[in-house]
Structures are given as C-alpha cells and as structure tokens.
Image (cartoon, rainbow, N blue to C red):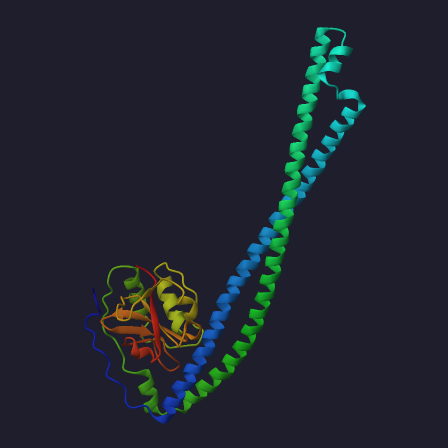
Length: 327
C-alpha cells in the first residue's frame, strides 16, 4: 500500500493551559450544534425531495383520474345507447329472426346484425368496466399522493423551524468561541494551530486514495463552521469536498456521511476511509479522513488549519467507527 513519503509526524504540542482546555471544550460543544444544524439541513433536503415527488405523483394521478372519468362517461353513454336499442326491438334471438324473416337471406342478415350488436355491447361494457376501475385506482393514488405531500410539507416546516432555532443557537455560541479564541495567549494559539505540515503525500491508486490526496492538498486552510471549501472548511465540509472532486457525492453532515459506504474494522483503515467521532451514531460530531501510515487529515476547530494527526486519537478521544466510501 502506498503511504505518504517524506512524512514526519508533528511533535506533540506543549501542555495545554487551562484557558486552552476550556476553549477546546467549548469548541466541541459548538461543533455538536453545528452538526445538528447540518444534519437538519440534510433531512430538509430529503423532505423537500419527497414533497416534490408527492406533488408530481398527485398531478399525474389527478390527470389520470380526469381522463378515466371522461372515458367512463363516454363508454357509459355507448352502453346506454346499445341498451336502448335492445329495448326498442333490436334485441331478438335467432329463432324470432327465423320466424319473422321473409327468406333465408333475410334470416342470415338479421342474425348477423344481432351478433354485431351483442359484440358491440360486450366490448362497450368491458371498456366501461376498465375505465371505472382506472378511475377508482387513480382516485386512490391521488389520495395517497395528497397525504404524502401533506406529511412531507409538515415535516419540512418542522425541520425549517428547527434549523432556524439551531442556527440562532449556533451563531450565539460561535460568538462565544471566537471571543474565547481572541482571549487565548499566543502560546495557546500556537499550540492549537500545531506545527506546519508540508510533507509530500503520495496517494495510492483508487478513488479513496484520490480523495485523500485532495484532502491533503487542503492542509493549511482554516476551519470555519458550515464551510465546504474551497477556502475554508468544517470537518464534513472537507470530506464532502474531497470526494466531490473525484466524482463521489456526500452530504454536508458527518452523521449523514456515517450512513454511506461500508463499515471498516478498527485498524483496518485504508486511505480515503472516513473516521467518525461521537458516543453513538446519533451524536456524531466530527469526521476525519484516513491517509495511511497511521495518520489522518481533518478540519478540527476554529483557529486550527486543516492538518494531519495520528489516527484515530488525534481527532478526538471518542472514536466511534469508520466507513469505506469507495473500494
């Protein structure tokens, strides 16, 4: 397996001050709120998609129902005309045609006419039955589509309200984090940023390796909540951006990204695998990308550029699991 070349693991940072420790704790709390916001936005996109599909189905069902009802009326009129004709004497049996006929030819002509009438009536009744069934089926589909549209709209509105509140909470907390960052000493800021990593990275073949190369090319770019490049990133914005550049679409949410690909056992990671952090799937707050040789790359927090770290501990102490997106 190809691994980074000319790579030297950065030296461990100096012991964090109490202010830096508090800042990092506050930053993680904000990251959790940011993830809630991103996950809600992803869910909202899905609900809006469901709403659009339900509205399309509703329009198609209503059009089908209108056409079926028109066909039903047309065939019902045809059946009524044939029924009226039979009551006016057109409906004879072949024996009466024989008894009242003037000749054998007359009998054959009458019998043939009766056969045509009976066939027309049967076809009209069959067409009427089909149109009636189609109208009923279209009506049922329209009711189902209407319910799905109503449910999706209600869910979308609920998510929109949730996003508004979460965004307001996030903005408030981001302000606190930025104020806390400005209060850090120069030494704390240097410790937070860590050493500059200009090592050369040789990506292995394959989609995962190509995504890892893209992510590594973003080293040095700063963290920003909700950002997905190309100038700044948050954690899931970086992994989404890296995979997008190699033709793989991921949502901008670490919790949603955790549902993609296949699970990878601890220590069996390959370049491009995503490493997730949180106590459970519903509380994931961070994602990083494995690059090989026991290292990962990630966008961690405000004041910290995209950088490498030891895998998995370098991105947090609550490693949850990994997913292989490609390969």
